[in-house]
Structures are given as structure tokens and as C-alpha cells.
Length: 510
Image 1 (spheres, rainbow, N blue to C red):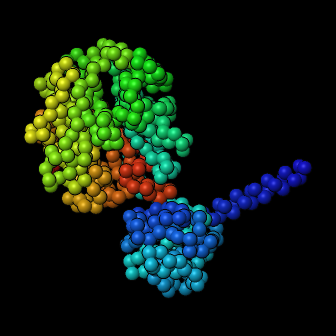
Image 2 (image 1 turned 90 degrees about the vertical axis):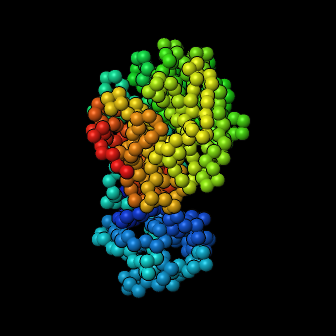
Image 3 (image 1 turned 135 degrees about the horizontal axis):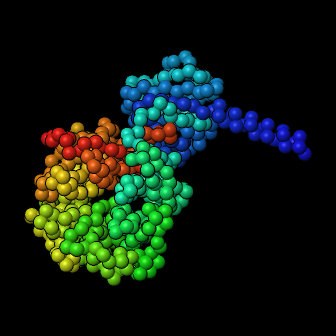
């Protein structure tokens, strides 16, 4: 029996060695790795070519290197041990090292000829013809020599198709510790908020806690406690949670006395947006989708006395909820909704809700809703309260700096060179720092993160805080990893941390 066990372990080690020998390493720009399956696109950003049942069985279920159909990038591959790979090309390959198998498959009424080659431990350039990308197939493929991800990686999802990062949030505790969070399917199944802690100014991070059944949330510190305020996971009840030990343990919003602020499900929405203080109250913007449902958001403001028990729903006042009108931007521009509002205190001490306006063809319009002193009424005039704010078709956070006496934000401004490549709501490949004296007139100070590809790269849903002369922020980042590219820029595969040094000295730019 023992001899059988030794033999069994030997076979296992042998199989593991064979599996490892099948790994093909690939390097090059804008390279994705996918799996051959029904209706999978052969090329990036193209629906014209998909896999069908007519492909050879030895390719079915393998991985393949995917690029734009017309690509000028040079892609190289190698294997640590001799490994057979396959190549598919629309145009015949005249390289003798690639052997014509005599087989082919049809996709999009085009014929893809199949070639084979034994790879070894040296880099080989994948042959392309007439600017048309070829497809490389192997059992296991992994990217190497990756471009460096900007900032410090806090979390990297291993499968952004089914587990992408949302809801980045950041808060600095009084003792100087940073708490960052995001929501993802860390177990591959259920969306969970995970908090991370840094005690060295963001250089390193450790998991602090996991919180189930919350989403669309922000983090803020208030009267010796850390709070998380949002919804009960997705479009759901409004909730608020409290931690008295810096984010390790949290209350549960089980009823109206412990943080359940509304008993209505499938209704409320928000993001990692700031709280404001004014009129002796704490203010937090939210949205609901009543009565139409889906994404027909109405904007409203929550507020409570500063010294109240914030877990008690009875202390909170909800303003009237204002719906949007799609005609407010005129016939040339689309108005697809307003959402993810910021509670902001004006220089006069009043409270406003500044929301992103979601539109596809243009960018740079936000809405400013004025809130009454008692927190019950809301006022909006589309003639005067639609303001210019660079990047306002995506989520943003506004905070006031008492040293510069300016309002600041970090946004996904749309540059002319990117316009038209995606609709404006998905152009998230560049971040700019902006400032304003009055909340109505904003100026771009500088570009702080940038990538030339808007389809698969994004720095988005930024939450940030002042830290002395610096701004620190976290980003829901879509970027290259060993599995290739994220499914799209929206489906971020990283939570990243960044420091913007001496932000007040950054030059004003047009």
C-alpha cells in the first residue's frame, strides 16, 4: 500500500511537471488572454468574428492570445520547455518554422488557416500579415513583462470578468492610519466590502475586515467612531454601520435602531461620496429610483444632528426627492440621469448636492441642487443650476481646503484626442486635478494619471483625502495583469493607492 502511495505521488509530480511545461509566456502591448468557447470574440472590440463549432477539437477550450484585429504591436512568445502551439491567420503564413496543418475554420465568412510550431525557451515573434493580427493557441498562457500599474496595488482581482472591483473608499483616522476599502466577489460568488489598513502612509496594506451585505458606501470618521454609510448591498435599503475599534468590528443594521435607515428594498443608490457639516448637522447625499425603477434616479439629501446617535433612523431627515428631466440639456445633448451626489457646504454656509450628469456624447455638466436649512426641501433651476465641471459625466468627489480656500476634485476629464473612441461616460483613462473658488467655475490644474487606451484602461470612482500638503486617493483601476486585459475599462481589476504631492502648487492648465 505504501509503495502504491509513493507511485501515485510520483505520477502526480510528473503530471504537475507536464502542466507547468505547457505554460506559454507572452509579452507585448495591448495583449489579452481568453478561452476558446462558443461566441467568444476573436479580436478586441470587434463583434464580427466569433468561435463556432467548426474549429478543430484540439483548439477547443484552450487559451488564446487576443488583440485588436489590426494591430501594429509586436508580440513575442516562449515556453520554458518544448511545447506545441497553434496559430490561426486569415492570410497564409510563409514562415517555414510554422507548419501548415492543412486545417482551417470559418468565422465571419473568413477562413482562418491553422499552423503549428514547437516553442522552446527563447522568444519568438508571432507572425502577422498585412497588419492583420494572428491568433495563438496554447493550453496555458501567461503574460510577463507587464507595464507597471500606476500607484500601489492594494488588491488585484484574478478574474475581472466575474470579479471586478467597485466602490473604492478612503479615510484617514486621527492617529494617521489609512483605511481603504472596495467591493468585489472575493470568494467568486458574493459581493463583499473588504477594508484594508496602512500604518506607513500607504506604502503597504493589510486586510482589516470583511463586511457583507453593504454597497454604494462611503467611509467617514465622526465623533470618535468610524462609519460606513450606503445601502444593504446594491440597490437596496439605506444603512449606516459604526465601528469603535478602527474598522475591525462593525455594527449590524438589523432594525431602525441599529442602522437600518429605510425598510424599502431595491430602491436606494449612492457611491463613495463625502459627508458635509453645516447648520449643526451632518449631511449625506443619496438617490432613489422611485417610482419608475431601474436607473431613473431622484436626488435627495439625508441629514442628522451632529451629536445624535447616527444608528437611530429617527434622527435622520430626508429632503424631498427631485427627479431629472431629460430635456434640460437641450436637443443636442443627452441627459441620461443624475447620480452619485456630493454633499458640499458653500462658502456662505449653505448645503448643496452636486451630482454628475450622465451623458454619452459630451461631458462636463454637473447639477447643483440647493437644500433648505431644515434639510426638508430641495430647489433646482435648470437655467442656473447646471454648471460646467470637467469630467462630470463620471463620478467625482468634492472637498474644501481651508488653506487654499478652494474646492478641489479629481475627475475623468474628456480630452479631445479620446473623444469618440467610447461614449463620454466610459472615457476614464485620464485623471485631472481641478479646483474652484465658488463651485460654479472650475479650472484644470494638471493631469495626474493618463493612458492612451480608453477601452481597457481606466482610473475611476476616485475617493480621496487631504494629507497635509498632499492629496492621497484610491482608484478603481483597470489595467494589464498576467491574465491579459480586463473585459473593459469599467470592469476594473485593481484597487490602487496614490499620493499627489504638493497639490496646491500644481500649475493651472487650460
